[in-house]
Image 1: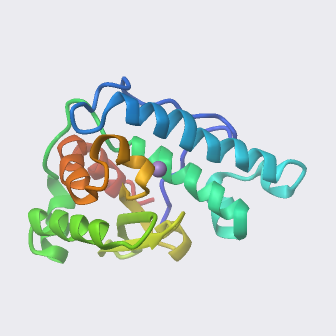
Image 2 (image 1 turned 135 degrees about the vertical axis):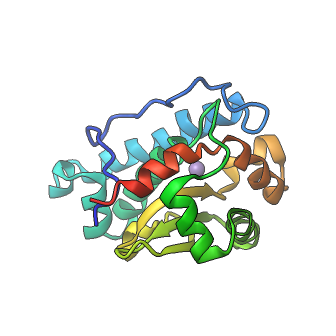
Length: 203
Ligand code: MN
């Protein structure tokens, strides 16, 4: 099973695939400027600083995540997680999963609404900073996983499909302390066509 490879030179900042205001009113341009230009870019530049002159400087983010630990792994995972997170939204999203992904979600969670509700509740309940993921194993079984800090299913050998960033920097400018409402609104801009493509990309 191949994890979605993020095709980029290691220390390149991947631009947003839409305008900064494209996700308004659910995610503001101000939030995206801070989140992409400062937080995400900060992880990339920290990773560059930490890996200079080491064998990691020639690896892909996925290779670093699975072969390092400590600050290098944290910054590589945060770089990967953010490219993946920003890449799942669109201004004109497909609001519902279709095809094989919809069938798998209904098989493993009962319904799409139940899957979204479980993810939202786990995001609201995760203590501190972290991520909630929809991921699949090598047999195509789906899992909802909460990971603290920089955690990603790649570390568990699972393939990520969808990410909810529950670090305060992802929502605090727009939603203050209302993390659950931020996640409920986020669903309005998740493009299930993209999630479906990730699911179909089984390698
Ligand atoms: Mn973030």
